[in-house]
Amino acid sequence: MPEITLECQGLPCPQPVLKCKNCIESETPASIQVIVDNDPARENVSRFLGAKGYEVSSSQQGNEYTVIGVRSGECEICKVMTEEQIQTTANPDTQKICAFITTDVVGSGDDELGSRLMNNFLATLPEMGNDLWRIILVNGGVKLAVEGSECLEKLQELESSGVSILVCGTCLEFFGITDKKRIGETTNMLDVVTSLQLASKVIQTA
Image (cartoon, rainbow, N blue to C red):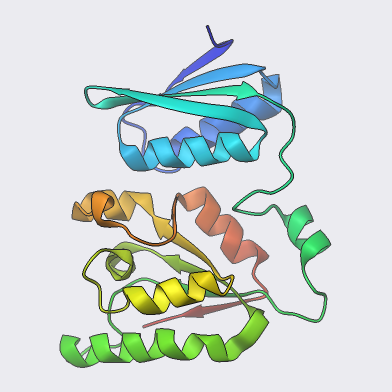
């Protein structure tokens, strides 16, 4: 049995990940079991434990997910990089620009026009070159990352070029589109806040 069990059912994002973080920092368990009640939380906890050097497995029973992490040594690469990793690996001459997208359209007045503008915005982001580091999708912005989105191809091209894409798990669940996500890493508010803190510049659509 795992050394420690954390019962995180009903906790809002990013509390399950924060509980894992606090437990690992204070007790450094060789194994840990985390119980959550939604798939975005399962994915976030799994990714966090994996980044901390744990071998991760998960199972589902009814509406609950059990994530088990067994320590296997420190990992070398974390999908959501720590500040130390960024300072070590990033080119000092390159900025870390983060695009923070909170809606699936640009501007207000006409949603059809706003959708076209969003498509154009994403198509133009590659002009930033290596300065573009990360795209964060929250609230209505997560609709850009799902099956049927007119912008999905643009996001796939950006990810293929090395741009990190984070998609808010709470937002996906709120809109009932978690299973339709086709691009990016499901993320939590801790990752979002950390990314905004580490970015050298943040661009937000309005």
